[in-house]
Length: 383
Image (cartoon, rainbow, N blue to C red; front, side, top):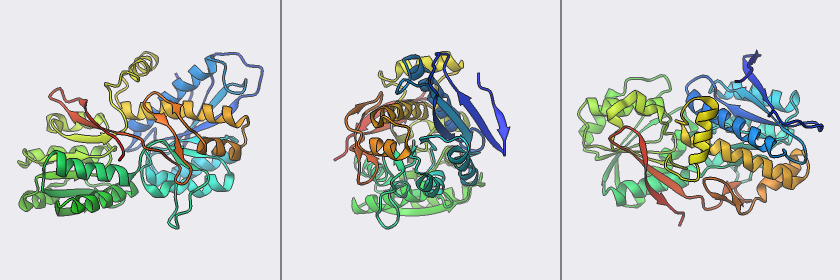
């Protein structure tokens, strides 16, 4: 289905639809972790982007030209992402970069896209510093389609304290993750303001697989809710081990680092856990997209959140290039920044030019059911 050429430890894929165009294609890029720890997310996103590009080209392309999708593998590492982005800009001459889905990667690539004047839009890059630097200056070529850590951290705190009614919280976080650190910080701040008590705040490292020492502290503390601001595998292992050591009544809440593959790792231990994210498998607007994804790639759209974000992001990019009327990166960045009322599949997008964040994007809370699948629980609208 895809032709893959390994080049300088990067995976490079060029995708065009079967439509016939006389005009030169418009090159756009996708930065995805196709291998490494975050591969389930990355593969879902690159597949969804490919599917959207093919649909757009079959409908006539953009500015009378086909889109050509260039995909590089980050191997889920910032250093590989930096090499990939450098090649995208200098060799492939792309006009816009989509992805990646982790904050640490887009923080690493931000100086490159600003220097090269090529806009980059992250999918699940929730750390505020991805789009606004430490001095409060908006990064002119960095954007996101997701909400931010302060927003989801606050939602998680309010949900744990007010909806679940839990007074004592524990937090376990990856000390090497920009995403986890940001989300942890805002949860603790908001939960404490609400009158909750954070009784455990423990870290772990990327390579850790045994979390029983941290869970013993949680057990001893009397915490009745555990907040996990992590990504994928580590959270699944923590949840599995929490149930194994007897923390069966402990409520567990996490952010948008949730992935359906976690259910395969933790099994029944996942039942009853809650996750704050951007969309849900039950969304009727996304149902036709998920169906086409399954037909196209002969697999379920299991990481439905990543599929949704990447699919809608690709249509947003096509819209921005069309409004810019140009493949100039600065013009496209301006069009991205000025997006207003764009009807995407999972929400209506208006950008905040001061932050390069979506304005008032709602959050979805999922709950894992007895079938060990995620299900819609509630929507949280911005205040």
